[in-house]
Image (cartoon, rainbow, N blue to C red; front, side, top):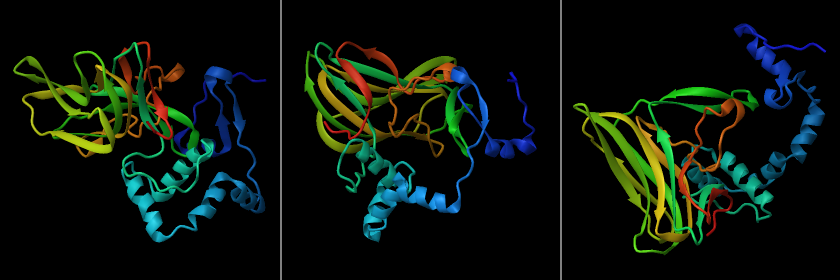
Length: 295
């Protein structure tokens, strides 16, 4: 069997190559093989009818325009179409053995971030850093099994809009309490580094709600910023979803849908920072993405 270290594909052949060949993870068992043969039209029709999409499509066709519009409004928060959100939500319901076709929430969709603090712990602090340049991963178009590294240049501008949807059930412990989602912005003015902090404070006990705050003006040049989830002096649970840090018309929050808040990147993607870096996570504290995000 031939052993190959490098293959260079001319630009004009890349589309043809991606259609003809597929690759496995080179860090596990690197192989290149032909795509599976395409099934016949009759076989495609049967697969479609038997698939999850086909099953959910039969339910979708029974919905009225008014019901579909509910899914459209809910999906607009995370830039999903009504059909995309319907499939994502009901696929998660099937996995969790829950009733299908339940109307979605306008405040959270599918998975949400979930923090659980139990004694002896009494706090958690997570951060997500935003320097001017950093690495992220993204799916490769027309190759859903593959991802690639992308070098981001985040050009800072004002105003900065901070948004979160959350639900809390926290009980005070100790003499000092705080629970918040906040941003710390680093600026430089006349040779001096200045840190500016703007926060959204959480109510200790609150059903799902939407909160936002904006930063309209700051003195100096923005060097970078860091967003935090901070709970101190409490035990209990906190769920959150649909995070946003918007400036220049773009939401720069990483994993804004809170699908994988505990994800860390490995192997070829180890250069990518975790979505949330633990600063203070002691014994008795856990954080992950869950469905459904009930407290």
